[in-house]
Length: 161
Image 1 (spheres, rainbow, N blue to C red):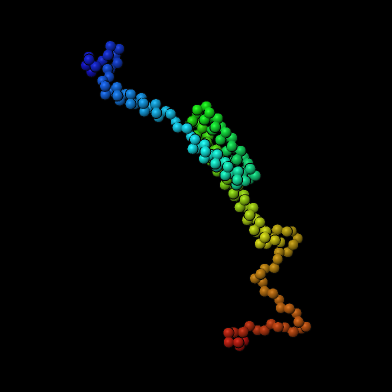
Image 2 (tube, rainbow, N blue to C red):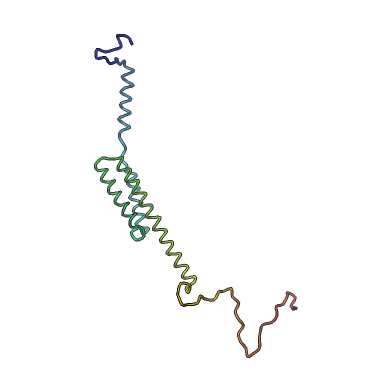
């Protein structure tokens, strides 16, 4: 460094290129620090909570559903305080909890439907003390007719035994 490039305070002097680079760097750093508001994430979380409610999460997954609602409320509060990163994180967690509640509700509903179908298909299977119904594949005995039988020996296609 020569004597002309050092200021009287000991700092290097900046030429116009250096000043432009420094100001551009500071400008980009300022832009990187501002996080956009997570309005889309908040909307997606609210929609996921509504879907969970329609799926019956209040009955089948109340803990997950309540957690999703609390996290969405906390995300709204973080937005009011301009804590956008925190709001985004809470909104994502609320959406995940709501989706879990939806899946658990759908699973419980499917299990109930499957149980109902099994009960309709075999109504005596779950009743203690009752014999299961006769299988459709079991052959029926011929009707009794005063000592004579209508059963004959099996025949071949040509009609001869």
